[in-house]
Image (cartoon, rainbow, N blue to C red):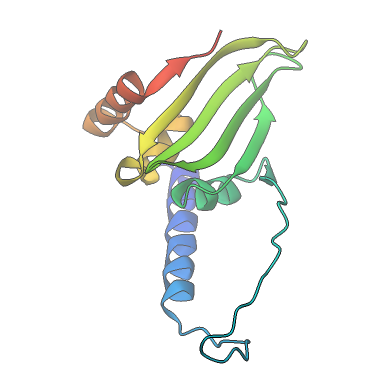
Length: 151
């Protein structure tokens, strides 16, 4: 593995470890509701997280299938690589990725609804061509089964 790949793998491992610790810690209830009492709460819809070009942000949100958007420059001047996680839908993670030309038209892309159990670090690595061998074959097979091409 080269240094960049090692750095990404270590960063992902740290993020996952922090997330696991966070969810395992007991939560302190801040409510004073008595049994039988009814309460209502309004929750604001704040939309997807704007990850900009932060791959750690994308990895965290993809692995939990939380709405997020990631954008980075692509190879052609003015073109962009965009990955959008729409969220969980009926036990599947809905996400898509596309390459946009400088004028905003789609050069290539896929829209995917993959079973939650199949969303792994390998899914994230596949976005950036960091998967090889049988891992790449598995991810390509998942794309063929659960993704449709954008045109």
